[in-house]
Length: 507
Image 1: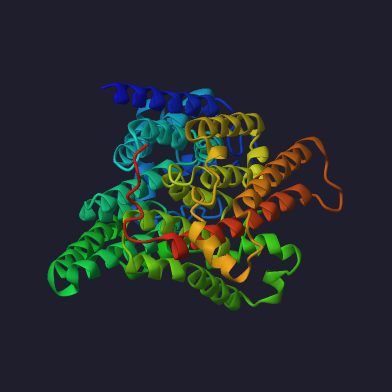
Image 2: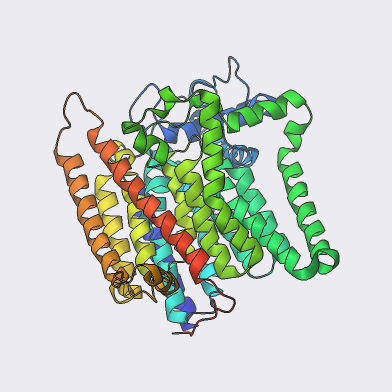
């Protein structure tokens, strides 16, 4: 009873922080003619309520796709429609066709913020609580600490409750999927992952390791026995859920193709805006968009993404255990973010979720990564006037992690999961003896660099001939961090995992 009381306090604290951030500005506030993501979400409610389903993804006089045209999967559209019905009941002017464009009022802001909070309460927060509850390898105190740190992760809070999106829905479904397959509720896990993928196409980041994990389970049970039966059940669950979500768009070929074109807009180019992936960050030195033809950009992007995630996926199929699954989720999501085509800065949240799932296992590196992921979105957060909430939530998160997990005391080679790697390296490089100390020094340099760049971006005006100087520096520094973390997580997957390793002493 006591641990559930503490968990309730943790949830209330997470909700309080969320609602406090929601009192601040949002994307595109008072900035016509396009406004921002807040208007995009409101406009999708307007479109889905006032137009028939067949017109949702098509350009027309009533649906100008250049003005925040719907470009997310069908489940997002159904969610927008549900919100629209509630909005119509409260005030039809909020979602009136054409005349509601750019609508802004305190009442409507309260409604929109409340829709995010309700989605969080129904999907994401229960998934976090259940995930921490089923962490049997750690004590009850550490489970509550894990829930606190995950719910205080600033990146998701700032984007959903500040910038304004519904990332907690797709991430919540994905987390239910992880919980399902980890607890051998394979059909529930498959259904949850399919819902995540049908809500946001970027959930492809998590889909590949999910299917590799289940495939490994099937092979382990015997492909001609129980494994075959499990495989058939999983296929039926996946196909059935996709058919239900896409049924209105399967009736006509043109409908299906148009939805796919909207979901995967390859014509937009290799990247947009300032994002901390390889293509954007290193375009300072090599203009990929100008040097490589468009179709070559797509091929190179696909190949590099596939090659970077292949080792982890192969290892997961061969060794389908829960701990390996969580680390492979991190590695694959990070590979997609760094190398795939048309990535947005907010996509780092899809990497941050699986990192949150290993926070109790490698608290030092996980905390470091989650701070960098929030820092990588600094240009967007400054644009939305969310500097103060960003600083406060980041500091609160860091203090919670440092206090709960004693991260600086858990930075030895053993705690960092680098013991096997360091032993292998020392066979060839005997002078490499202080790997953990080097990483702690890198952490200190990283924190100082991020603080300095943040102060410079807030207090200094960039040169007239380099207006994006600070945004580019933030992206480049963040990208170097992410490449380092990709190498680190792959080292853990390749060197550290052995059967039975995931059974740790409870403390």
